Every structure is written in C-alpha cells, then in structure tokens.
Amino acid sequence: MEKSITPYELIGGEPAVKQLVHRFYELMDELPEAYAVRQLHPESLAGSEEMLFEYLSGWLGGPNLYIAKKGHPRLRMRHAPYAIGARERDEWMLCMTQALTEQVGDEGFRQALLNQFSELASHMINSH
Image (cartoon, rainbow, N blue to C red; front, side, top):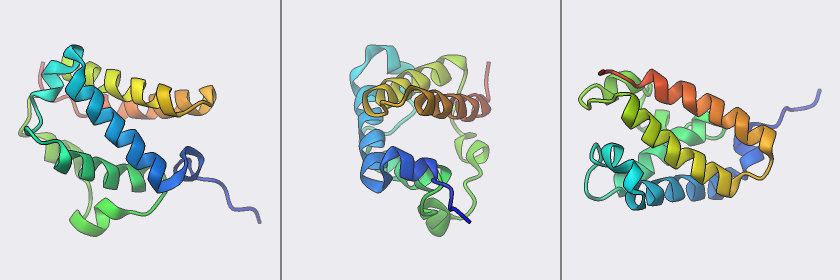
C-alpha cells in the first residue's frame, strides 16, 4: 500500500511552510492594499508568524504543532475579538495568493491550496 503524499510534503515541508508564512506577513506589512488586515495584528508580527506556521504545519498534513501547544484551533472563536469582514478576508487572500504564487510553481497544486485558503478565510468573516 502506497502512502499518499501530503500537501505539507508537496510544498516542501517545514522550511517551505516557514518561508510561505514569512513572505505572507512581509507582504501584509508592505502592501498598502493590506492595510485593514494589517491593523488587526500587533505591531510585531513574530507571534502571528509563529502561530500561523504551527497551524499550517498541521493543516497541510505535517506535524500538528499548533494542536500540541494550544489544543483544537477553534479558529472562529480565536478570531471573534477581531472585526473581520469581506475587506479583511480579501486583503488576507491578496497576501496569501502572492506568497503562494511566488513559491508554488505547480499551478494545479497552487490553485487547490488557494481554494482551501479561500474557504478558510471566508469562514473567519464575522462582521459586515
């Protein structure tokens, strides 16, 4: 029986996920088009970067680092204190789309990831 390859392995494992997350937050910091979503984050993005890396590690099929540290992600509950609307979702997706485009050459794989990220980002919307 052949073991299936996880998205975590396909993207390149821990170093690639760290690189993706780092670039994502660089873009959030640099792009004026990401101003609203950037304002939801603390001045230093280091903690956010670590949490997203740990979450994505497990979400992509790698080690469940986030769950090991904090338990079930409960993403909507953890994001409830922040007003997240369509604008913030779209800005988040702008950064993630750019980071993935720079890093993931396989168009089919990249699009599959973007579809999953889009569902996840839309699920976080809690204000209109």
